[in-house]
Image 1: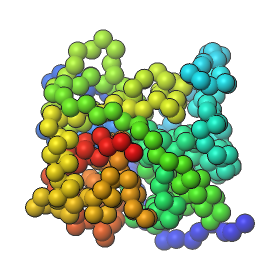
Image 2: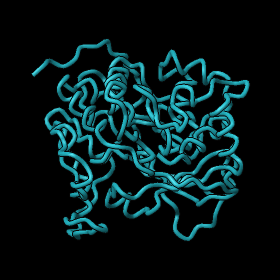
Image 3: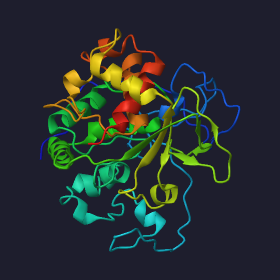
Image 4: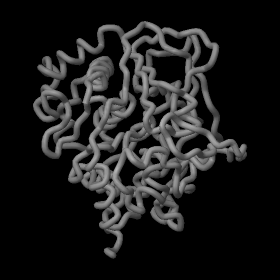
Length: 351
């Protein structure tokens, strides 16, 4: 087995986590903010005194040292079911850090050990926990199914060197991912890259143009969940993304249940025009990502990915926390509204 890859590490020193609390987006909330807080799973702008990700020094374990650790959920012993799944799991079995439930083993090839179970002694949680065994992932993390293996490995290196960080210091799971990347052996990194590259990306987001959206609350790591019984709220210039089936996504980690993205009226058409021509602000997205946005060569596909993930990447690159010599000049002139239009269009494309 190879040694851990030795890379220059850029440390980000941030204040320790003080508390965790769910916050709600209700009528009257300010939507005219500069940064797209909603893409990071937050419902208000970053302010002095806000809880941010815990420090993550080189010797730290990805989990729990670099992550938000929610309060334990008491095991209720209830074995839950999902449509078409042979096995049943309790909520805590579904969320086991080092071997989470695999509801549909027939949907994917055999998982490498690092994907299925991680490395418990090192605090490296299973890839399948956040990204699902099929790589579809959720709005608060990355969708990795179908990514070219070379691109996947390139991004692990970027996490390792500090070239890929979050523009919002509240997003702790980016720090956890960076520390995971530092602790992977070459064999483990390649196994994960080849595994996720072997699967095709499938439709995952239903994009709805609207002037209103559900009132939502945010979980510890930034999953938006509708507030039962709450009246719809004005959408404004933002996107609200929620699970199609909140219980199946939040409680059971259903890898077949996708998301709904509520986007501003007219954003898909505006995004299509910008993606295909670049307007006078950027280069046409289809030049590199392909006519259908499914990717080309080692350029990743962006069609049908969650709007939250796509928006975070554009904003991180725009803010310089995600380094990309190719993308940086392409996002330089984009306004928030342009980015919203682009991700609405990209997410609406069927892979």
